[in-house]
Length: 337
Image (cartoon, one colour):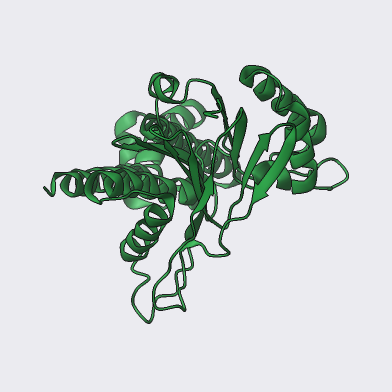
């Protein structure tokens, strides 16, 4: 069964083709000058349409028009390029959002949860992912290298690879999931060749929830898991290894951490965007402060926790620009003891 790989290749080709086509269309000076020459030249110089085409064929329009008209044309061209680029990125956001797990699917499985997903730009280098293998449910918060368009391309690649791994591989724990993802990303970015200079990759916090036992298994590539149980916050650090990028060891593996769920427990998976957000004094919010905040609010219903986190972010950030993509997943599990 290679159908998922075929569909993935077709989808990747479509996304790349769409991006290249939009970029070339936006950067085509003949098209944009043709659009604006009628508005500016006809209005200011009184040329007829056939005369304008003759001028374009025989002269350099920017220089021949003179400074004032030339600046107007240049401004119009830049504005048109910007509109085309923004329209393409906005459409790319729809594609990216369509690849994320639906709220209906997550509610059916996780029941009591929240997800905060705030791209720094229109599209995001962060993404969250959900997959299922029998009675094992996987959920991950992923932070890709970069943000904006480059980060979004990498996030789409990671999303598709994770989905394909769960469908095609006998994956029974998050450490195996991360190992397969690491190998897949290195192949996709051609990082396995000795002369590769690409260091792009991802940091991932991944959990597996076993519906038969009710327990949780965590594995991390550069990202931790926070969880609150009996009013105490615990942190499990992920391995100090990334997904993708340079690899010195012969084989990259990750460690599983088992978490028995005996009483009500709240899990938190995050990217580093919230903790790294600066305020007007250029001071980061910080991981320690975030852990303290999560611990203090873990007793609240999940929707109120989400509201509290967003309010805390707004108060800290103030009028400052968002520094990075922000993703926080919160999941409340009932104890099985």
